[in-house]
Length: 78
Image (cartoon, rainbow, N blue to C red; front, side, top):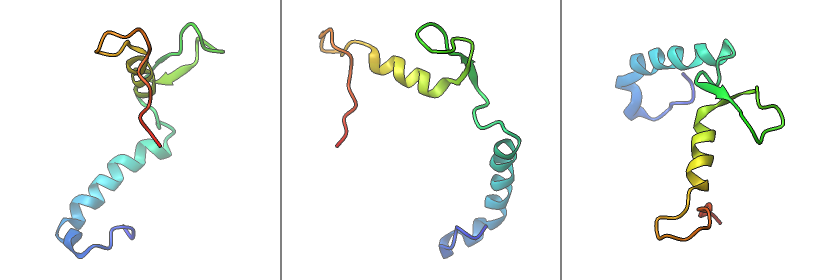
């Protein structure tokens, strides 16, 4: 594990090596988004399997704001 050079991580080298195997295996086997659902209506291909995390984020952002306004929440960036 070359990217973890911080000496403070040296005592955890074995744990980091085990973790590297756990996370790298699904990635190399093509399971980059292991939790998916069908895209659904409103998408170009409703039958396409999409990762649930971005879908949940999109749905959350589209909910009305808690202060009662009808406008969807927006990203707070830049």
